[in-house]
Length: 113
Length: 112
Image 1 (cartoon, rainbow over the protein chains, first blue to last red):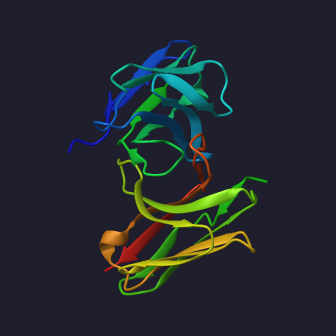
Image 2: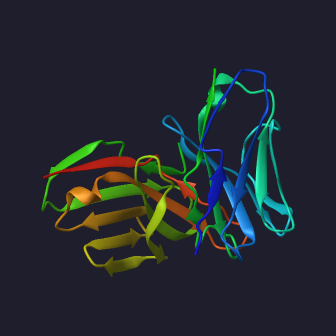
Image 3: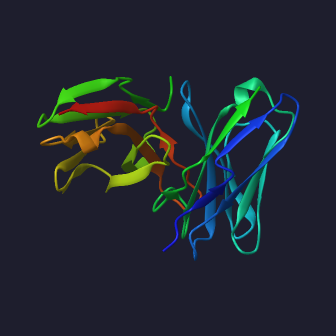
């Protein structure tokens, strides 16, 4: 079966711009979580959506937001980009969430210049 | 202090060696303990998961959890060059709302 698909794979943006990243989960998975991965901080939890509702949120500023559609596809948005937002953004899907049974996508590499 | 601490590495071993990877944690509420492997330009993939304390074996891999010491380990026997990757420990509390808390990861290189 198809895995978790993230688009685009690579992105270069300028400081101050905004960006939208997309995640298509595995068919039947209703939970989608987003993580930011950097060399300095490792993987950090951004938020989780389940059946179109945000169920959990990490300690990131309000510039980071997300949503989930009725088909479970999810998007995350970062506004007013800063250089420190450069990272690999990973999406993971599962049937129920809660950190178990995650399947990760290959990520979107965002570079802010 | 971070909730999950992992030896930073990197680690380089000869083929056939036994590899020991370790993490410590501070949150007593963690119930599920996982090891992920991440190859370059890929997302993490789940290697093993353990509920509460104990050992779990899967082929060349053994995961150990000691909740009394807040310490988890992953052992890789007869390491192969294909094991070269970044290994991340991860933990979560019980409950559907829980999230994964990761260690920073350690990069392992197995030399032929």
